[in-house]
Length: 473
Image 1 (cartoon, one colour):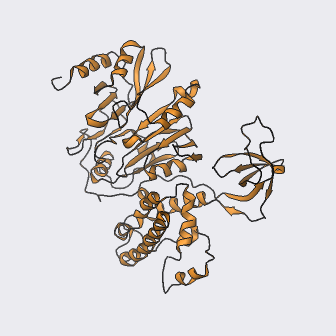
Image 2 (cartoon, helix red, strand yellow; image 1 turned 135 degrees about the vertical axis):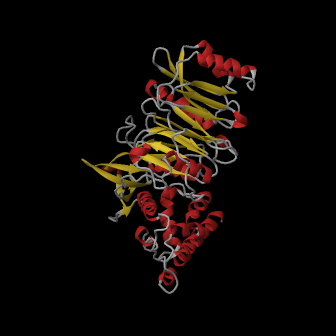
Image 3 (tube, helix red, strand yellow; image 1 turned 180 degrees about the vertical axis):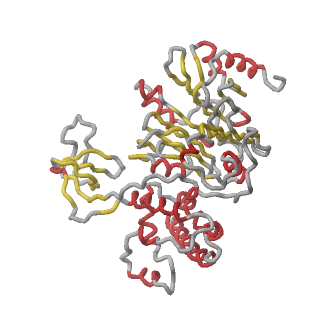
């Protein structure tokens, strides 16, 4: 206790009065300036526990702390509790980002949503909050936001945050500004590690296997905690399920320190220092391509004004009509990305042409790239044109001949595809472009084809650069 402040000693005494978590239950939170919170089956530990939290634990019937997260400021935090009567509640600091507080205020009146609320805070006021299938985020890396889009049935961006509805439950999400992230959702596990330290720890957790862990093996992972406030993503805790009376396998590492592990884990073999998102996803069933037709609204309002499930329209508004539900009812989407039911008498189709959903096309492209981009295996360049519509610009046709390029696309093809992300911007393009950098792309190439494929990757890399220049203008 000699290194603990009086406040930390008092916090330790208060925490010891609570029930310990059950086997395979953990909560770990890292904050700025060494702030930490640990809740495990062996007990609790805290450094710089917020005094408001300490008072709550001392004066309220708190049985356990089941979730904790620290944000960028001393008064930015989230704690969730299980009470003595079995009910759940939460407590937040006064310094939460306004858009997060707005999301919390919106769900608080609903008991079921309030009791299941989870918040993960990050650096620079970033956050992801979710309850049941509803979620909101702001300030997270573009790659993390794109993953949330893929896991959602719908999403809507605004100036203050992005909100959406998950297809399945979200269990855990952590990220760092250096590009590292880990997500565990009902659909699977998704991650990207930009540090060799983190990657080595991950390999060590799976007993030195360099091949990707199976979905069954990954289901044994009960915690991936990451310090988003550290200079790089090299402060983390990885814990697997406990079996019999043995200690749970774990890896704990602090930035610029050695890794601490359970004795059962073997040292990891050397691995490449950088791994991309494209290599780190557990495969899930690809979504079927979606199609829509353009239409123009003939009337303002809704057929039944009080039915919020119907999409509100404005006369002359251009909408996407997705699904025919029968009896002249359709699922339609307005320009803000909001979807709802619309009756066929309220709109007129703009011709008979059917359009492929750019978002589902981009999702299929990204899923296929993950399967193709395996280190040291690629012999043929990915068939990019399979995912892109034909460009009608006559000036682009000479660019697609075998004498000038092997990638078969122009900047217009690429622009049309990438716009389907719903997050098209200079920063997003810059991040997505990295996988096509010739030196990074070379990792995926078979030695006999490396130089040729690097040349093709350079062409795609340049096209991304052109799109970035267009964004700036």
